[in-house]
Image (cartoon, rainbow, N blue to C red; front, side, top):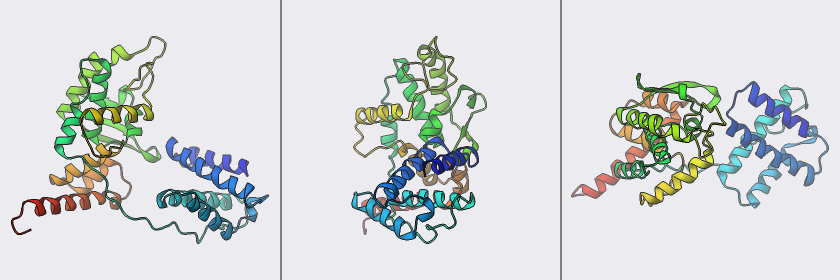
Amino acid sequence: MRDHLQDFIHYMVVEKGLAKNTVAAYERDLKHYLLFLDKVEQLASLNEVTRAHIVQFLSHLKSEGKSAKTIARHVASVRSFHQFLLRDKAVEHDPSVHIEPPKMEKTLPKVLNLAEVEALLAAPDTSTPFGKRDQAMLELLYATGMRVSELISLNLDDVHLTMGFVRCTGKGNKERIIPIGKTAIRVLETYLQAGRPQLKSAKHAEEALFLNHHGKRLSRQGFWKLLKALSKKANIEKELTPHTLRHSFATHLLENGADLRAVQEMLGHADISTTQIYTHVTKTRMKDVYSQFHPRA
């Protein structure tokens, strides 16, 4: 069974061109699934798997206290895996055909207001090379709406300050060009001239735009740690995630009259329905303003 999993992971990386984080999530989910089939159901072959076995696995996840979102992700992983096995003729049937993910409650993304964004962007200590780097990262995130994984994957030649744009590679290795404003350009220039040279290591010829204290590419975990520290410094009480600035970018653009299609393009969403969640956020905020300020509300 493990050999089939490795074949599937190879297919996801080479043929589908999925991002590392996505592939890692598939692998993690399916290792959990195969362990359940082996140890609990004691199946010797994937050809023995029935719909009942998959339902039992999902019940097992629920009993472990997994959220509806996590279970839905497992369903997607299991279905993709069985579809691959059938296509590869490794099995004779697909037991996942009629398996439906649990219904999830729709939650609106958390966003920062303008005052909170300003406080966060002002939090780094720009008298140090690391502070210059942190400010450049935050400004670039808010200026472009990039995912954190896209931000830390940037190389020096992806940023074109004279032309005012950045090139990033998103999900499915899809490349997109995003414009950046004057403030982000100025902060990036400062980092490149007076921050990054101090972070470079003589041992590594690193092409990454953003470097850690070893002179290597900053990791996603490294960014998450510094974001939490800067959020605390800025006295932001809302729960902050690496996606918060992305959500704020999209919401603030739409609140100021930006075209939904343009925002979809900048975010790199394949389907506009994904982008439309931000229109619900702006409507909710509009209701809050109405309730607060209208004399008859």
